[in-house]
Image (cartoon, rainbow, N blue to C red; front, top):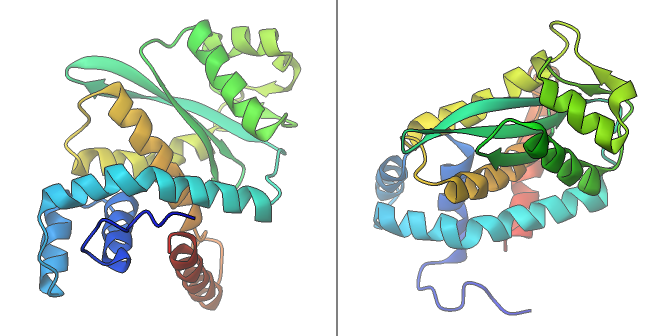
Length: 231
């Protein structure tokens, strides 16, 4: 296999660390530049920007492949919701789907919130993850129209408060959006949310549910697996 780091003078460990810090934590490029400088690593924020654009999709792809191989995704319940994102003053919609444990399944950016966009989102989701037993949404009519076309209207759940799982899952993305001072194009947004979702899933330890010792073990295992995946 060709080494993707072969033309870079910086060690892969530093590149891997910079990409992880930028995508995983709500830090700006200059924040990471300063943090690495304290550790004796002198690079510019534009170098970090180039690294995450170059290696972020590759790291995310490897994480998704490993998780699909090692884990049977639960299709017990999906939670679907959309958030408003402004790009150059124009309103866009970020459709997101999570399972009952908060695992991000799919993210899709569109300019409209109509049946066509909902249908494309549902088809992308079902192509990758199959069919669930229950789909929890809000009362947006686009969901109902799209589910009638794919045959899932009978399993839709629109009861109040049942979709809090999806609404709470938007928080990490909103924190990243604020640190990045928003996005400049829909393509950049789509690229970033795809990378962010995979890395967030990898380091999501459910610390509000697990005992402290279990969380420490899961965190160490996630770091070891991260180093192996992107070595």
